[in-house]
Length: 399
Image (tube, rainbow, N blue to C red; front, top):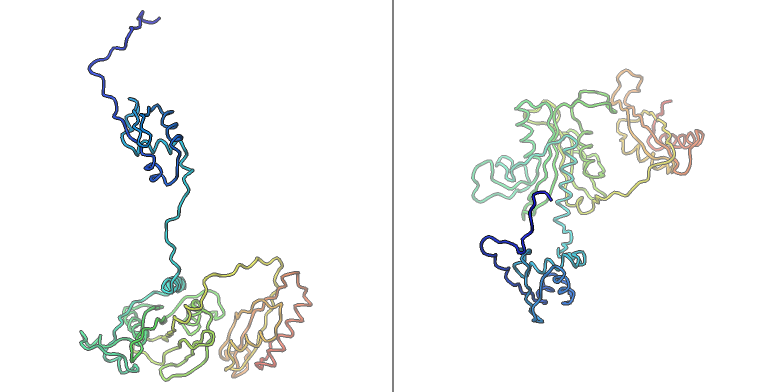
């Protein structure tokens, strides 16, 4: 219609025709072995036939004639691919071939220490790594540290029995470098004499000044003190601190976890180059890692509001915060949800404090999970707690 052409009776081909693709054999048992499932030979034959292939007469190992437009089919695996593509690859069941390895003690300890490092770093501490060998001058201060037969130098002659000596060396170097705030921790092995048994421990060293926000101490810029050390240790676990004494400490407490003594901490009485208090602590991690659970139970969001009341009191200088908390807890008031210390005066500073007394103020939170509390209910519970403080710790309550 366009150019006046007429169709030729045959197809004109320039040159020789390309050869036909070679035949490809298919083993039905090989089909099952490769796919991992059984496909009936008749099903496989039907699929290949619909794709335009022609089968030979062999029953177990047929050869298939490949059409010229499917030159991609060159091997047996190519035929199997076409079969499973049409049959449905989703019909092959999945199989988990991985091997489950139960959690070992080493895995639990590694996870525990990893989380511990993250928590301490989040509090502003820096991890230190010190040598496991101590100098000859430090050996005399230990209880028979195991010495090396051929030490390389006088600074590395014995296995350490504590992490504190190494951290104090790091503190001294930071002081000479002009650091204003030093907060270090180390997790490592110590070697108990006489057998050299390894013990996994955590040590913390604090020194210098810190700029703090609004807290119960009130000061914006202050020196690091025992409460900062105690706060860092609280990131590890719920410990009990019992007052103790040692010649090398101005203030010292033994640290208990559940019923076991696991370490000590406090303010050192003298250091070589520090102009600010140096606070150190060392605890055994093995006991904590065995019992500490990372999983925390879910707690439903409270539906009813809380009620907060304050208690301010004067107590004797030897009455501890723990004793006051124990007195409040001994009242066994189910509505009491939380107790927080928010103010403390340690000495007579002209603010109306009696001599030889310290002033503390606590915030007490009350809540009932099933209803809203009335003011009269809270006042009655609050009065009973105040009376318990008068009787148990001799508190002089402020109105």
